[in-house]
Length: 245
Image 1: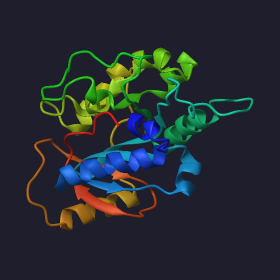
Image 2 (image 1 turned 30 degrees about the horizontal axis):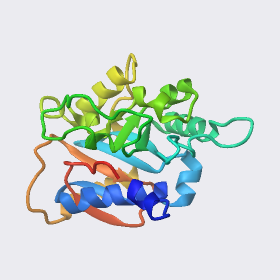
Image 3 (image 1 turned 90 degrees about the vertical axis):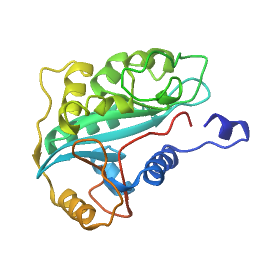
Image 4 (image 1 turned 120 degrees about the horizontal axis):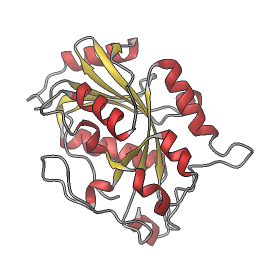
């Protein structure tokens, strides 16, 4: 994003989302993730840019994720909208997710900026290093709204590198790790439990099962990233995520 700005270009959140999913697909194709890109109509209904499904057997834990990018002024300028309720999109994400049995999340696309310090130890047992793993960072909508600011300097404290979602999957499983992330980092008494997979996820999972692949992910379970409407499909394994854009 910083390099694009230096040549007069501004990468949209849709472009960054596609690039992130593309990097996952290329680096880890042939294992345990199904990636499906979104439609504008779907996003307008539920306020999310993508769905994340962590699958165990015939049940799964679903997340709806809204992406926001950092701008050169140190703000996530599209986080709020003009009007009487600047957090209308956030409220839609939360209410639609609750009604459909999803956990809502924000994903912030970041780059090195003087308004925020992207550092700190890596709490997971892998080779990722700061500051690159802050490139895609997660936050909980209620905490985002409570901060009541679009500034990186105010929001940085409630962000977590997105690999933290499944950080403990080696000793639990994908769903157990994600549930612990929601309850501990989201400061919740409980998380929405695994439920029966909806049709579009079952269909994607069947496609994954029938695909030819060269090896299984070391993680316990499967991860499906996608939408209700399927416009494009790729197969890949959960692993390294892109760093700073």
